[in-house]
Length: 163
Image (tube, rainbow, N blue to C red; front, side, top):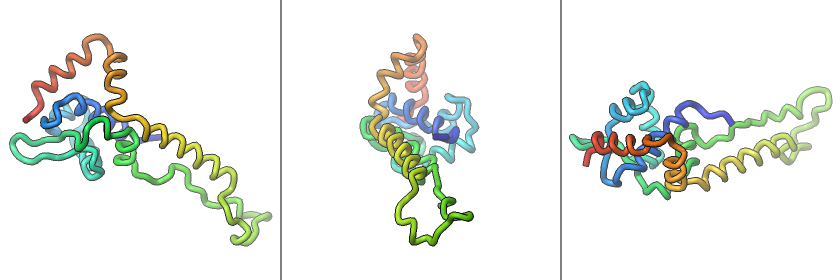
């Protein structure tokens, strides 16, 4: 599976926001600065995550972004789908129906073995992502991060969140 850079950005943004208190928000400019990302493109990712119900956008002087649900209710698939959409990566064009051995379309009632195999692999991949929440990996992320990085992130959040 190939995913756009926006998926990586969305996952990291949501993971950072998972460490904030539920009522706190972080503005888009601060999020862009934290990850050194271009603000215009980051805004598109934030909008996609908000439209999908992964993030909540709060207006006003204390506004910004926060998780729309608790971290245990947001899966990696939610974030991936918000950014990339739900369509299959593999699109069968029924090439088997063309050429000198092609038959009438009614002779092909089911997907070919190639399409079925790839779609099964995609489904297994989606099932795995659906089974991993932000909450599931926060401890693992903290344990795998270089020493002190988690503490730096929490300190940064304390300075940049709005209540």
